[in-house]
Image (cartoon, rainbow, N blue to C red; front, side, top):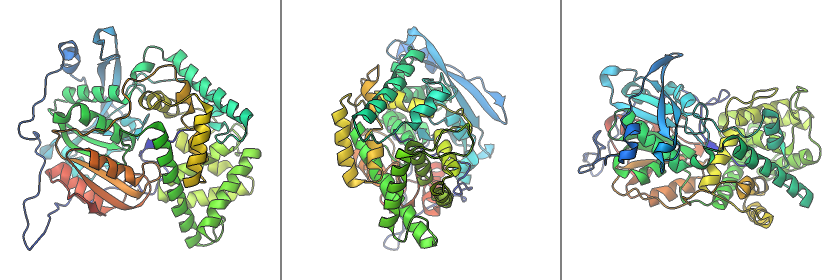
Length: 518
């Protein structure tokens, strides 16, 4: 199955913590302190915001009607289903705001997106105290929205909960033609279910559509420019916005990059490499800690994991509760992947693997449930495992030819023997997708934008470090912050170096030094 790109706070994560207070950073050279580059609140000199097309004026002119919702403020944003035909009907997007902690220091609104595609910005913004630094929390209203098709915004629904269980449990690494056909049948079931249940919206949930929605949200918030924090897939959404509306880019941070020019194959191969690297780091830590059930070396441990998954392919094991699916290779892979997003979960994974090897898959299934937003015993709290296909298949179509995926499997397995086979077939549903996108992968330079801060982590499993460098080089006006570390994304995950630089950028407009290594 395809791997998700999001950085939402997780209940099991030990990485959730309040960020340290922002510190102003100064660059010292030759015994002098030059004035740092700053991003003004009003934008670069000469920048103007072009008025919307007349047919969209009613959307851009709307006022948000904020109401209390469980300690926060919520509103509905009205957007057209089809921007090329604004009079053809509209939908409403759910928006949530957490007011600046210090209204006297308020700078404006900061729109946040955790990734996915399919992650809920509404739920993400509720964790405002954890997802931004304290100084940012004091100075900005933190605003999250569920993108079209996600969560509470005209949600895409393709399969029943039981059918989704079956889909996610399908053998992801076919060994013969019959197993390939089983995977094709599952892919067709997802594609046909999405078409049958979402006929009007399915062709209009691309990242480009979401970026246009984000500009309508900017106007409704009363901002001349958009201040933004995008993590994981949220970086793709952010770079797409910057390419479409460069003069409306305010203070932008893109953390854990998905470059806009990646093809489906490049995306999958990059993730295979990333998860392989992250898993090797996990095994090295397990061996270093001692009493590691995987063996006495990294290579031995990686071999153990491959053999374990191969065994589940042939003989799934019980997951504890009889109502739970059996722990198949697919579910176990999702459980292992979930722990790679946050090194604070590595100890949990080790215990889960030890128990699963003894025949009890309950803990590893619990990690898989976390990954899939699944409730133990059945049911899902969100629709990320469905909408991820609806968005990705418009943005990055793939082939219906099985030989294509057989080729992926051979190629990916050479660079990622553990994760290559799993990710090679992840986009097969896109080969049978009923609607086609009209905006193929392409480079984005965002000429004329304010400085954009790009952030990458060296052993990020889902968004490999090379992708952050790639986007930094493509953007006309960007700087790169690098974190030498593990886990997915960097900001507010424990590095004071990263946090201080980004906090100072948001609050004081101080652009970090390009090439800062933390």
